[in-house]
Length: 212
Ligand code: ADP
Ligand code: MG
Ligand code: MG
Image (cartoon, rainbow, N blue to C red; front, side, top):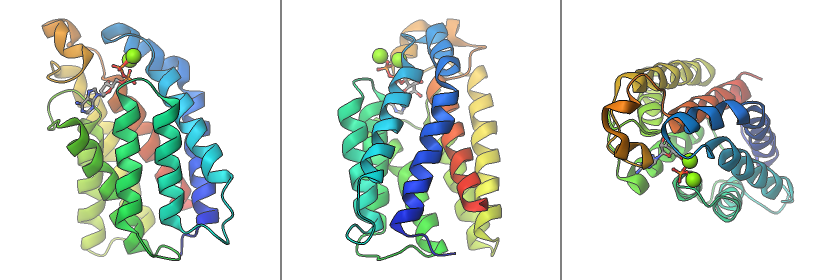
């Protein structure tokens, strides 16, 4: 498939809708091991990103400009830690597809992988530290491996969504080395990391977008 700015408008709207539907659930998860605002932060950020991307004229704005607009809007809308993490993710996706008038499947996989890399580098977290990286890293690895071995885009992203879900689930057994939850020691065991949960929702939205 070819993914143009119009399609990214649809993607960001889809993500915003799926995150909005889980807003209260994400706040509850963050209430258990953080300060309870993760659903509000992600809802505000994703809604602002979707609005900024929707405001672009697809005839004038290339996909990279859409990712950059999403990054800026997300950062401005969110005061929590997730703000700079997703702003960096979207900036990196934009940089990965710089100068492309529309995205090939391969471009899209590279943009997706760049998002994960951006989150990881901005937060300096490694897998196993009970953060959103525990969903993003395996998701990007799964997509890259599947795509490199000839799996179609839609199936590659379904595999990424499954890896993100499993990665999120695995955060239950971890103590936290980064973020607010790192102050709570063993008490966080048994709780899913809220950032990993929202990441799994976003990766699922991306997979759904590619299937449609
Ligand atoms: P805050 O803790 O500022 O209220 P949020 O509630 O929006 O921010 O986000 C919390 C989530 O951010 C955590 O569940 C975790 O997944 C993620 N997070 C925190 N610090 C980092 C980091 N250094 N790297 C990656 N993710 C992080
Ligand atoms: Mg929070
Ligand atoms: Mg907060």
